[in-house]
Structure formats: C-alpha cells, structure tokens
Image (cartoon, rainbow, N blue to C red; front, side, top):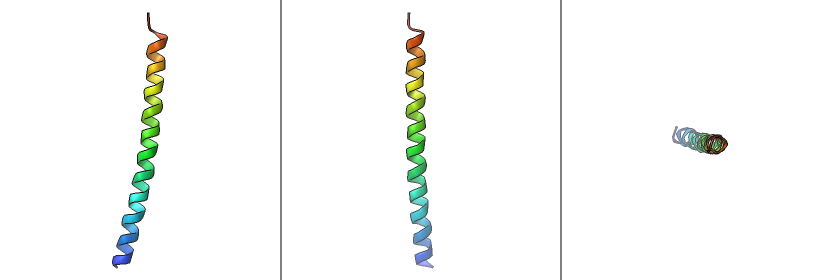
Length: 43
C-alpha cells in the first residue's frame, strides 16, 4: 500500500513538474509576443 502511494505521489510530482515547465514556456512565449505586439505599435 505504501509503495503504491509513493508511486502515485512520484508520478504526480513528475506530472506537475512537466505541466509547470510547459505553462512557463507558454507564459514566456505569450509575454514575448506581447512585447513584439507593443513594439509594432510604438510611436
């Protein structure tokens, strides 16, 4: 039972870490596009 729980926790941790890095990449690219967008309309 304990081994099974440890496996679930480990896979959950790996999943959240992977999802977190993906979110970070998406956020970074959105930020980069926002900067490009703002620069294209700079006076």
